[in-house]
Length: 126
Image (cartoon, rainbow, N blue to C red; front, side, top):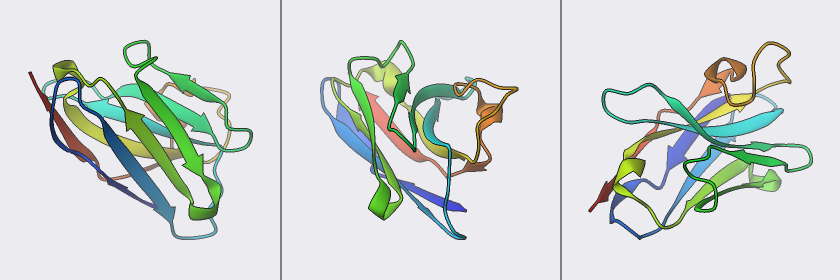
C-alpha cells in the first residue's frame, strides 16, 4: 500500500487547509486511516482517525471542533479539513493506514498503523 499526502502549505492563523491522502497499491483494505503530525523537535502525535467501515471518527483534544476527517471510499482517499488554524498546528502531517483492528494498541497510537505516507508540511504564521 502506498500513501500520497498532499495539500499542505503556508497559511495565516485563522485560515483553513484541506489535506488529502490517496491510498494505492495492492487491493486496498483497511480498518482505519489516521492523521498524525510532527512538529520540529517533537514526537509524532495523533491528530484524527476515521474507521473505514462505518465512518466513526476520533480526534485529539487539541484539534477537536476545528478539524474534520472524512473519506471517499470510491477514491480510497481520506481528507483532513483544518479550520481556524493556529501557529501551534505547524507540523509535518502524515497519513497512515491501520490494516486491521489492534488488540495491543489504541487507534491513537502510532503502533496501530502499518503504512505511512511521506508527509506534507503545514506552516501557520501568526
